[in-house]
Image (cartoon, rainbow, N blue to C red; front, top):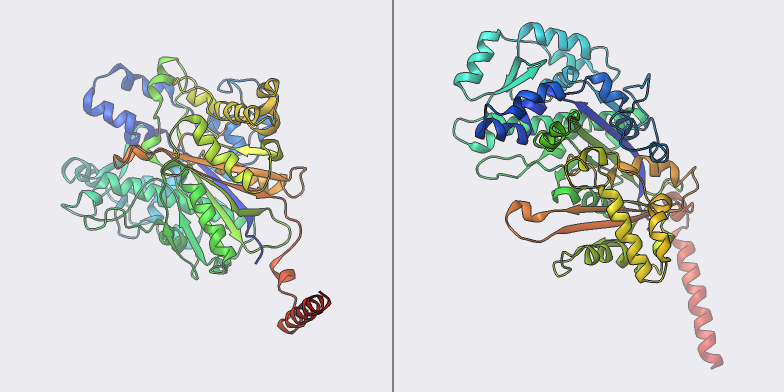
Length: 513
């Protein structure tokens, strides 16, 4: 059976300035430990408008209105640069404003936990009704608002999580259980945000690529949150919840977790399921993480920058049977960080990059483009983390020099030839390898590239179960034209005839000897 292919992709960002203040972990911890801090007082003055977020060049790259190559030609930092007349809708998806996202948040709630004030809900419904992906079912969910006094009481007396817009309390998420901490209002808010942003990415995947939702067989959700109750804290299932809302009535699914490396684990699993013939069409999807909003906000404010981690990220990728056109996923050329690999940068790169190349007798330079941790340096450099993609490319190039596949002078030019500038928000799972897939669909078909590698890394020690690091990679290539239909055109009788002729020839050879 031939390889599975990358068929289509959808990407979304959701501008959530109020969630930065009220739901981002950096800010909520600060409120608990130092409620009168100067930082918290300054945060509102460092939040961008929706127009500024749309005009920001890396965000335009994320939704497909600009390319990584175009971004690479713009001098860094990009924070003071913008694209005039930028469109919130792009080739891959959109940047959604906060108030419209609240419509999806309400619609994604099937247990009547999300409550909005009457007049605000009416305005949200009016705004979202103009969205090209809005459905009658979703709009019907945007009724039954309640009085503000009731919302205020739920937040102050019943442990509900407040929902804010423009600095004002407009709604809340109720706790789903009186005693279960896994179903408290904060966790339910986080999980509903994952679901709603995942649904948005899924809807764009389907709409932009004319995909029938009924054709989807399986869904793998690979964000970093976990839903469940006290008896199965991370039991799931975001995947099936998102599939239900996207109209995928013939799909089942499950969640896959691996911290930042989770999405590449999921892509490999999806490709293997398709290649094995278990399912024909598998979608890998992930919603955004509220906890990561404003994660490096203190460093941004200290340097008088806007808080750039003001968007939730989401994506959805369709992996299908070989159509003879779309890029193939070489799930036989996978790199993996083994338990015994070690955590040195050199050991990590060798296990993720050179090990799969060696399987195919390829050199480092035989990969046209590496998609590593594509984090936006505008975000990471002010926080002291440097330019993450650039550091990865330098390490890959250094290994290439050691393997005598590159000259030492090539280290300085390697990133420009085989890499890209980072453009993804620091949403944990969002940057690792995944942002490039949308562009790979063109680069490896109508473009002039033949091979790329997706690399995801994860920090397993964050869970306090192991000190181990994690990582996984996979090679994707231009399709040579062998589709499932072509590969199955030979009938069983023809195959038996060929086998018989081969055996006859083998017998004749034995007799001649």
